[in-house]
Picture (cartoon, rainbow, N blue to C red):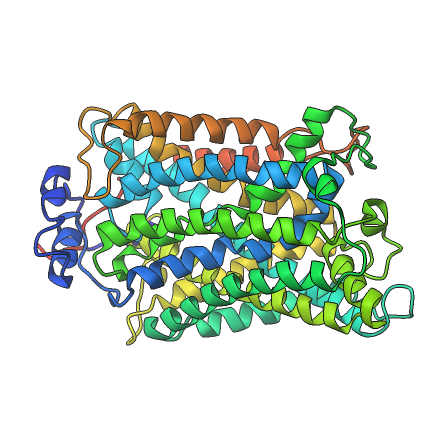
Length: 535
């Protein structure tokens, strides 16, 4: 399978944690110190180290992208609980996500490598003979989860373009053009092609695009949260925004707690992808500090900005059933209808609302671009350690020190993962469900190993939680366990083959594939991260 990635090399005991940690903070984080620590962790620097703290943060912030997650799942929030679920569910999910991020940041500071999570698992389980399996399991959940995120993001952009065209040609009730599923998949393919092309550019260009994307997301949120409710001729009251709990839904669910839990999906889906800061550490200056800070700042700022966006747009919400109806001008795309109606009610035309959707579309585009960046670095690192089929191909870097083959592989797989939408949206939704739960399982595994197996021998990096590290780690693990169960519950009753929540099937299927590949093949040759240092 991927044995070729092992040929010509040797399995080597990498530098000890204490030895690597000692390299942190020497010389105020110069480039030489970054390269020294990476060598002590077992790797020869191959990627261009050109990213600042701002650039590292920008990649994760662009992937979290509150404009992407909140916009695409605003209808889910309205259906399950409405304003109250969104307004209060967002800070709840945000607080626990920050806990997960803090636990990850502490480990990232100790092991700043592009491999990120799977490397952490291997090192934290290094005193156990099954450490390679821990690394294998974490790595595959991480990379498949990342591919699912890219698939979901770019497909949601393709769907938004479909809605923009529909509204721009007259709307659902005015003879507007509704693109077919084949046109939507063509949009998806074109978007991925452009993302792969951009990610083939030198890292200095990606740094520029990443910072521009972060600024666009920030400014876009403020423009929309002010403009939309200001333009709307009818606005919701503060009482409606902060207290109205919508129990009317077509899903056959009437238990208030159950409804609230399902409404959290919007928040938790949005607040993911921040592991990108870890995957970019081999290209980040002062990586053992800036990588962790990139994770935490991306989450923290997204929580604040996202809450403002939710509040602003919810003040423009009036008739929830109509916004969710497939008979409205946007064909049931709730937030698009909110934007469209706000401008149409004041100016007699919804063009302003379409322009607002364009602002969101640009944000989603940059989210997908940054997601491919993160995917490719994970694929580069995983293949560097021989874990992927044709590993020797995927960890090649070009003259610009960009893992070019890994970039195009990530785009191709994300295209393939969207193809089931042509046959069944149920099958497609099952696949992309791995984007949230599968990715969070990958987040939780190294944290679990840190608070259990490595509790006594874990050597902290310069960014650490001190005596609170273990408590924060346990809280993170328990939160991931909780959302894994909650998001596997049925979302529609009665449950049929068309309404079944296939999340546990998809995640369970991924686990079985990873486990069987380990038992049948990988256990014989995959020994975890290996050094690529000469001698």
